[in-house]
Length: 332
Length: 266
Image (tube, rainbow over all chains, first blue to last red):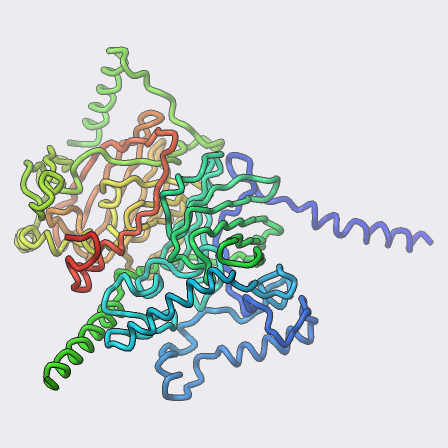
């Protein structure tokens, strides 16, 4: 009887210990997120369709999925041809993670409940189709190439290429999503300020928590204008003022990104986000990633400074155009 | 000027300000641990980015934009006036100066290196954490992570170098090594090699002014170490913030050979 009673007491206490863990504090008394965090994972952004409404893996399913993903992602498989060119780097050069997120979810997206990004609005879809059609027509002429985005793009002018090819910003900042490498983020906090250095092309997010308002709507920024405030243990960040080119999963400049950062343990920073872009998506969508503490240093990724690819893409497009012009002249 | 003479001069200056009763020296802010808290948005107010040494006004690279394009004059920020180039390096500096309107890495929106990032005509932000100080620069989104504990040697050379910080009294001292040889010190062609070693000192003299010194050592380029110094001023505007200044789009036409073809450019 006594033993059983003690057992119940202990069981009752266990979760309480977990909840009693409190984050270390910054000098101004807020939870400290300082350190280097990584979001690298094999958990997919969207739930694979064959998993239907299954939101969590069982341990067996997790094992099978992990093994399959590791095999699928291994860049040491050299099949020759296009695959070899596109995967010119072998597995040593990639760092896209080998594990599922600790929450055992089947997708990063948690809402809508099907774990998939909701459809675009008819208006946005028409806009994107129109743009794609214009590119298709334009690219019947020489001077186009497959850009880093994987899309055929006019490539005789730098400003017509995507942000990644131009080293301006990768899709790893707003929201903070894992990619094939450089999935590290270093957070430093000062009074009224949380700063995040994204290892991927050193995009720095400076998040004021001093109650200051957003920039005027006439000012647009690629990674938006973030403003933060504390809700207990959670930092809530509200970003607006985006440029249309940021194009989060087909989104537009009306993107309103809401993010929540909560330190849930010594080595875990829970990152939650909601993409609210009513002109682009039929409903808001949300995701979460328990980021894990990792060792540094965060490297300097001088992407633009070494952007030989841009030079070659543009030179090739111009050479194509010149050749076509000469051929046309020769026919006359 | 030796350090002591310099500090005496600084003390004299603040005493003079007190005596005149104009600007009461406001208290520097401190962390609970007692070190100065340098957090905030700072900017140099000089023309060192045009030329570290004393220079008069002169025409800039583009006469089409009239007075906007002129080189702004300045009395210089080099202690002793001259940068002590070795003979071969002096010739290289002369060549750089000749090529400056095309060869300056600032034109290409490359990360500016240290100390140039400090005195470019853009603000930078110090975020002082418990173990790491982040210095985020508006220009080119350049950033430095300054650990206050020595993490060991740099894994590789880089544009912004490898910074290690410590406190010397109220002065933040940052030792910077492992910078590559691709950056310049100014638009005039002053340069360095990959042997560059910079020791920066940031000393708060009141709530809104930091005295900045950088000692520059590079045995491949200079005959002795030399020093620059200048005040850095806090942005006290209510709406002060670093804006997004990703300058890549403004460099692309020059870099990729489309100069003048972009909408809005001449």
